[in-house]
Amino acid sequence: MVQPYRVIIIDDHRHAREAMRCILAQDPIFELVGEGGSGREAVRLAGQQMPDLILMDINMKEMDGLEATREIKSQYPRIKIVMVTISDDILHLFEALKKGASGYLMKNLNPSSWLDYLRAVALDELPLSRELAQRMLQEFAVPHHRGEAESLVTVREKEILAWVAQGASNKEIADRLCISEHTVKNHLKNILHKLHLQNRVQLARFAIENRMTHP
Image (cartoon, rainbow, N blue to C red; front, side, top):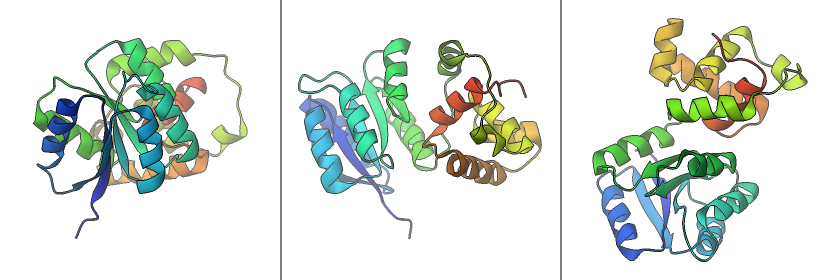
């Protein structure tokens, strides 16, 4: 039996929480273990429940989602956080990703899109959007200085990192490099472990900062 993926919902609107609860109930892999209406509740519940994932609204009155994300990721880096928003402001969402979020969902997406996205998060297969990848190229483009961390990465791993930085999915990377998706996933796990990173956004940032962007 597959281990349930434990989720907390944080949103200061009751109807929004109800809608997210209904979406999660459609897939037995997700188990709701708590919900709250503020960033402070998110921090408290994270410590109490140690979930696998938090669905976090960005705009809340008592500690917003950005600050709560920063605090939770500093204390519990293993917990994944997906921001939930009605805004498609790329700068706002980019700030959330810089604070440690794994991704974001628009509230106006249909439930099947939500479930596809959250399954990808659970399986560590979520690619960056092309727009976010481009934003990261602009934000983190800095002079290259070869460091100890980069020297740990093999030639093949650098190729994979370059595609990650361009927003490619595991399947797209596998097709480009003529390897299996399973092999891509294993490489990504190894890279995360070697570099002490947590998610695909951080991998992309590492690749961009170290000029691994042109496979």
